[in-house]
Amino acid sequence: MTPELKKFLKARAQALKPVVMTGQHGLTPTVLNEINLALDHHELVKVRLNAAEREDRKAMAEAIRADTAAELIQAIGHVITLYRKNLSKG
Image (cartoon, rainbow, N blue to C red; front, top):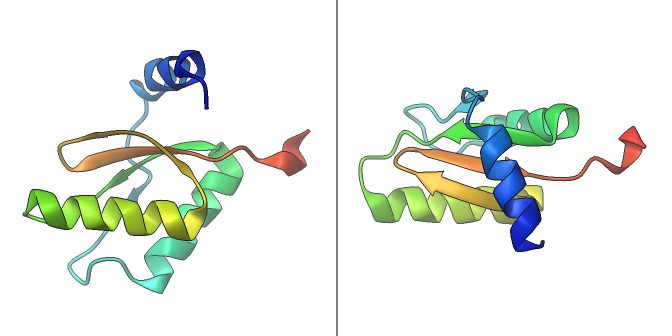
């Protein structure tokens, strides 16, 4: 991913609200499925991570990124922004 594309996506993501939030049970298969569905539909999504510690949030973000094959655009506080090109959209 080029720095220009990442900058463009960050700018687009500013107006977005988180579409998926991790619950009290953390990162479950259901939550991962919802993130995958959101990425399929929107390509660029925000996810709110409900973990108190910074290291826990980093680990969750990496697990989501690995499971969804998405690009981590940015992480600010409890919110991460992910991007995955939907090849079926044309």
